[in-house]
Image (cartoon, rainbow, N blue to C red):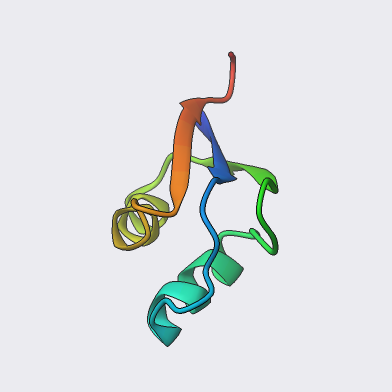
Length: 61
């Protein structure tokens, strides 16, 4: 299964509680933190909710 690297590039201060919860579920705790996750529909849905706060790359890069 392929993997993606998700990096938080914008602060969650002032964002909605659901957005902060999605960041926490993705394993992103503070600005600049990254996490490698499996490329599944559930993960893609969380990323879509916080797309304005994160950057997504292929994990092989």
